[in-house]
Amino acid sequence: MEHVITSHIRQHLDRNNILSAYQHGFRKLHSCETQLLVTVQDLLFKRDKHIPVDMAILDFSKAFDTVPHRRLLGKLSTYGINGPILRWIEAFLVDRVQGVVVEGFRSQEDKVMSGVPQGTVQGPLLFLLHINDLPSVVTSQVRLFADDCLLYRPILSSADRVAVQRDLYSLEKWCDTWGMRFNAKKCQIMSITRGKSHPTYLYTLFGHVLSSVQEAKYLGITVT
Image (tube, rainbow, N blue to C red; front, side, top):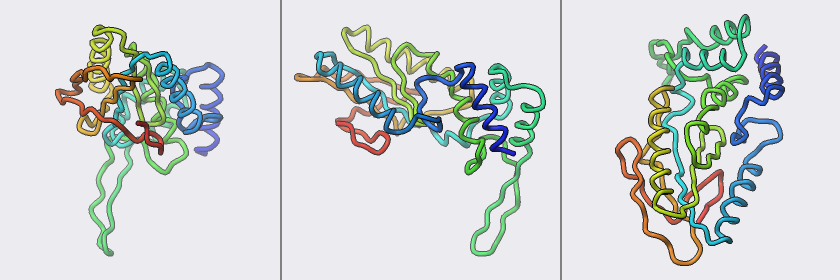
């Protein structure tokens, strides 16, 4: 049943070009490789042109577990997923319970108040739809692979650094609106440049100064 419904939803999304072009996770003809090729090519092109880039590597905090059900259902409706299908998805999400078994002892079951069920067919697609509008709230370039998020911008003047920080503030507001959260302590800033590096700007997210790094892991490779 999940496969049938998910297949029809994907057809609807593709037919109406709803999913963000910047999202390469859990999508047909998209992969880690396509995301890395597009992103690294873009960064190297700017580097070869001697254009500095400041890049934020952002880490969602328990991304799949924190999606608020009602807000997600509202987004699905705006994407044209309505009627019996929306009611079926609502029944699929709400009133779930879970418990834990440790060494033969079972805990009391409790209601699951948020999140998309992991290990399911439909869960990843529902998550993509919940964060689908994220790129629209910023002016810098965004790259998404499921819950992996990059934000970067060419730095031609101090105004560009201000613009990056303004985008980080916009992401804070987006998180507050849609019940998501970035783990600011795990988020990082990397300055990519050719030749003499420019002074590091102290970017903040949720009141935390983001650490500046010389290298970072992204989709299984180390970017330096």
